[in-house]
Image (cartoon, rainbow, N blue to C red; front, side, top):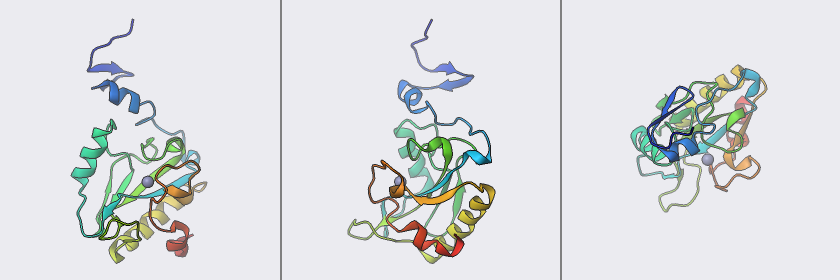
Length: 172
Ligand SMILES: [Zn+2]
């Protein structure tokens, strides 16, 4: 018999709403091994370069979309602060249908002051991202670095608003 009231327990985890249940079909599952990770996918937060988009705002917005927590594994603020939101082999919620074989990294920015897509990386972000991406590429030897827009069928055509493999060519 199917329980139809929320919160309900699915697979030992409490599910608060139907929206969360639907979003959670893969959200939070674990990948099998380091070989499962085929892509390191870079995103931007689509924030204007003169605005802040804090971890708290990101968490709020992703919860509103029905995610359990922030959908990316890592978030890099303009000042270079890095935060981790998923365990490394945890399935994220950032790039369907590739969530089961990728790590999601997002940087704060991606829009110029007028709201147009632009490479807004600060020197601090570039430095921290280079180190983080290099570490991930070493941890996951089968993985390739890609921008969100480079993935087949990606909906936000601009994300991450820069040529990922060119910007980070020094570590590839
Ligand atoms: Zn994206």
